[in-house]
Length: 202
Image 1 (cartoon, one colour):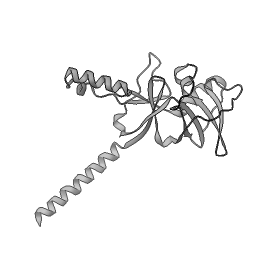
Image 2: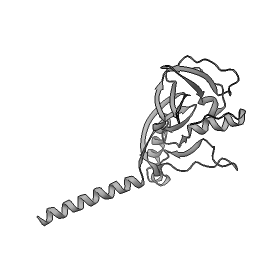
Image 3: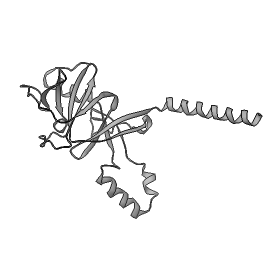
Image 4: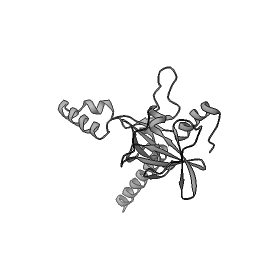
């Protein structure tokens, strides 16, 4: 009886320790996607849905990266092309994998056009590292963190041939590289304040 009591006590303590650790380092869920050759992610709590490309109505005088607006179940939603916003390039022709990610910014919704959605990932908050500085200006205002790169020590422990083979396979699927976690609100505010002092609240 005493042994069983001790086992139960240990299990209870172990569960309590695990719950405490989870509270200190909670799980987060991200939606990852490609814009050109780079992979980005947003907090999935911001997302409502991923759509096939919709018919867009242009808006005269809008910033270049705002493609226009769409009507979605009775609501009017602005469309931001992340290929223009992040890479500064003219958007390529949409493909069958092109998606519009409808995200919440406070009480407003915005659709972000991306080349393709890659995965939904769950990881501990501690696995998201601070955004790197870019030159002397610090991190880009819309990049809030990075994740996804294996620890260097873990890579070095593998045999050279296996490391090279893993690297080729990861690059083929867009894995093994740092992915940038975006602040979707900052994507709009920084440029819109610069372009005309207009803010999208929420």
